Image (cartoon, rainbow, N blue to C red; front, side, top):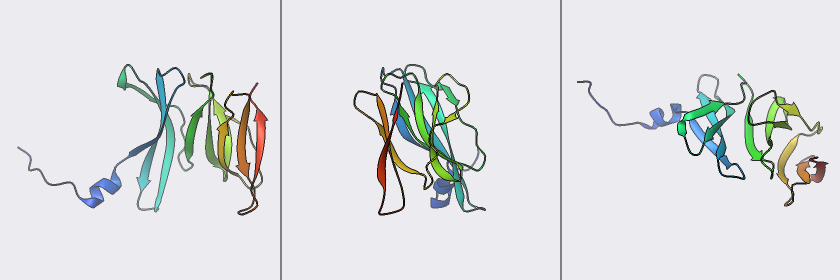
Length: 145
């Protein structure tokens, strides 16, 4: 029988971490991020995954595949037909949209200073995001139709 040992602080630091949980509007699916640490490079890397709320972990699949870039803040459109997320694929954080059933993500912003926050309007007709130099940020909007 293998000898067991207590989990150490370093063990925890090496673990993959799930976060940014976003249930779909109809409650059947959930988007989430998985962050993988790389202590040699002193960095982390995150991708977006999806799971069925009914079938659980066995149905989980990865939606984005980036080696050295991060995807974060997956947010469902109010009608559940797509989701938006932030990514530093182009160095500055920009917004991308993607269908949950697969396909390639499509870049939807090209803000010079990157995007620092976003959300859908209550009725879902607008996607509002914040961009600009620190202390001088402004709100911008995109139509979702």
